[in-house]
Length: 265
Image (cartoon, rainbow, N blue to C red):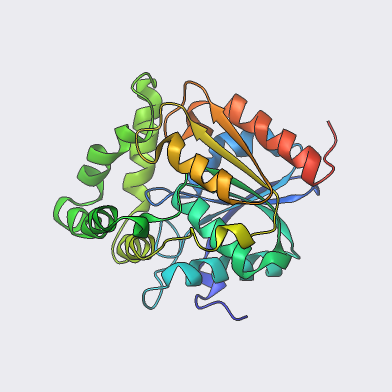
């Protein structure tokens, strides 16, 4: 299937060995920079790729709205280009994309790691309306003020100031219109609950116990519906558990891949 987005405009960060490929998909307010802790620690074991999603960061703007299928198909095209299949790690919105990717392109997804995610904002009209309102908020405030308002909620109240600043700076540098608005509309229109039971890839579902955005309950819903899943709570972490507790997060990722990819110790 041809991706609706030209891959030549897609910015990719890549590092690591000739081991299993792990494609990392960031959240709705972030970029490939969100996976800096994983690039620092997992490169000795894996070949890591992380995108700036279409319309984010250094990636070109799409010609129009992609919808969730468009993001999933673009990720599929990237995996094919790199020789696929791949293991896929998605955080928050990236987890929603990863799940749709696994549903649409099961041959390209060796396994899933879904962190701090949900079935989409379309499960609740109020959540959908709030998600759609974010584009106007970004337009009114601009990227820096928008990030200053939203960034601190993505980590726990006990997170060090340096991490809060890094999360906020990453968001301010990554988000812009129309890309963020396209992503928000895709989230608002999505309810994955009906397709989760058909996803065949083995999945690790993670959530921080202090997540103030989606919360452990949303992750438990995913884990309960996926037929081949394990669920983990990362203690002392907010929404961005991979950044706030990277040692614990990465240990679970490696444990999952030792089972699903035969990765050595």
